[in-house]
Length: 209
Image: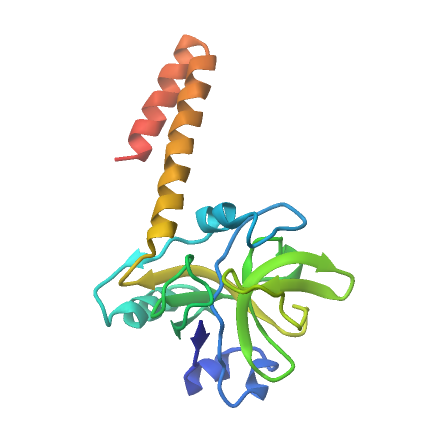
């Protein structure tokens, strides 16, 4: 999925991104994983579950909503995408909020925005850390990116998403994740002392209202 930055956005991004005539972004998804490596095929469910789920908005309001959200985050920017390279994570037309992130905080599974050697901005999932940087790959791409993500070309990570449509597979995976969470919570409650289980049930109930 590709994104085009406005002139104002280009002025706000790092000096590396200003080398591009237009900042084109291939959409990825943010994942807060602690593992050192991931596979976009094997770990698709994990990636989809941990990525920021798209907030559903009216068609045509995706970028408006993302821009409003970005204004509330220092240094954040909003981009509107088109393409299918990151399905089932996000459909074409999804808008994302990209937030600055320190390179040392990167982890496998995060979807980061970086600028490649052609001046093209790319947002893909980090799959493996190498001595010279991170290997990244699009969820719907068969091959890894040719460029590494480095301290010099990192722009930020996707922290929010807004869309007017979902993919059935993403909804299915998200539903399974919720079911697993409910089962895990129930099992934990069963293994707690009576007072602890009651407290757990109370917290879970309040959190789902």
